[in-house]
Image (cartoon, rainbow, N blue to C red; front, side):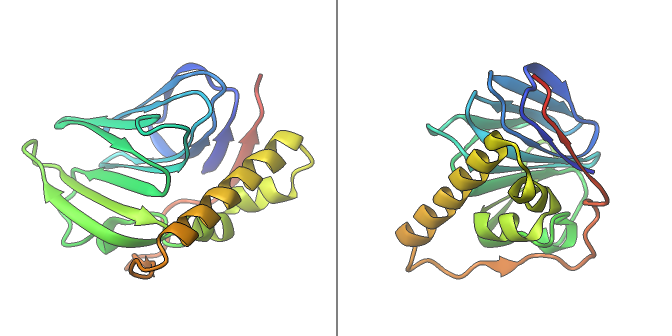
Length: 190
């Protein structure tokens, strides 16, 4: 299930599934594989699959607005960056990537002291906007805050494309069918 939480505050528990967080107040998302701290105004896509945690920084105002803390310490993200911690032994990111429509480049892998594996990459915001159902719903929404969010994410994608023209191309990283994205819910709680 891929959902949007715009009014979430304080602490949120995400056992399994994925959610787009755009909090108005600082938020901490607890999962079985780690904790994600999201500052007010930042936008992060969080995917928790029990054995893994993936976080995509879609928008922030400052480096450190999206921080992922696992057993081996914190990782600060910036716009267009992704990190995944997995307890599952995988030969490559392709083997465990749950969001196949999102393309990546510069994928790095590290075996951590805790035994977990860390994957990090740059990801294409454009591929997320065009490939994930939650963004299709946001694009069609009549809610002005949804339209504003989509415009900001499109602006971020354009800035990244302009400032990284000489970088390697984004590529699809998946050997399996998408695990998530069965149904989309949009929650506009106050």
